Length: 65
Image 1 (tube, rainbow, N blue to C red):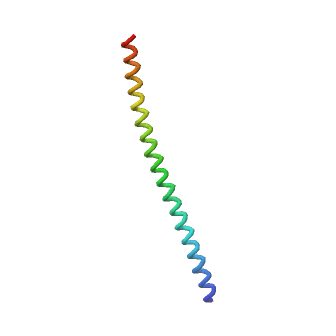
Image 2 (image 1 turned 180 degrees about the vertical axis):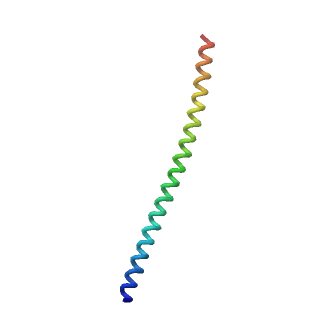
Image 3 (image 1 turned 90 degrees about the vertical axis):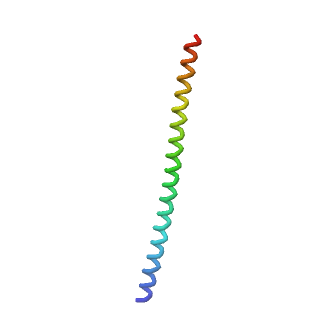
């Protein structure tokens, strides 16, 4: 009976370690997703700035012609 209990405890410890590993992977994935979202927001801001600059250049060309 003690062997069965030891085996069960060993199995439980292995499962706990696997769960901890999966949780760590999920946390890494979340961190990458947050970084990706931050980069997306930066790119959106850069895109808006370029649109404004492009419009200004077009307006300047129109007035120059």
